[in-house]
Length: 79
Length: 107
Image (tube, rainbow over all chains, first blue to last red; front, side):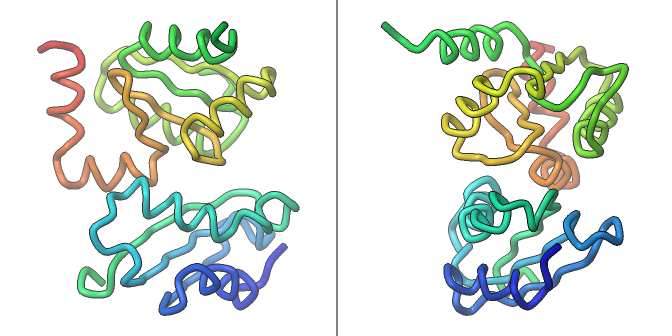
């Protein structure tokens, strides 16, 4: 179980300007749909964008607070 | 001597044009995302292979390191790594999936 603002803090450690939207897919707050909008994604392909998010959330994923993630990663202009 | 697990993965990736490493089997997928990935490829009608790595933790770790991608399922098309449906869905939406599969199967 992780709260949106804790998750956002993890993402912002790596992407300070990130706008993060978290929605709960199953009601247990550990199967999450996460949308991250950041200039840090500029020029990066989809795989690398998602790798950046996984790196930012490595700790809560390893300790089980996050079980499953559905990711969307965009740069602001695309938003 | 190359790592035997690595060699096994390389063989599997080369042997299947569409290969999914996931949780469970085609008949009994053990996780929503694996099921979603099966349904994704069912739409296109090309043959694909699902290898269960729930029962193969060493291979699962080797794959995570090799692809720098921590989660399952992991999809390989024509020997290339494509992540999971978070990557495949946007590609399909942009019409990139059909030509990719056609090329892979030499149509």
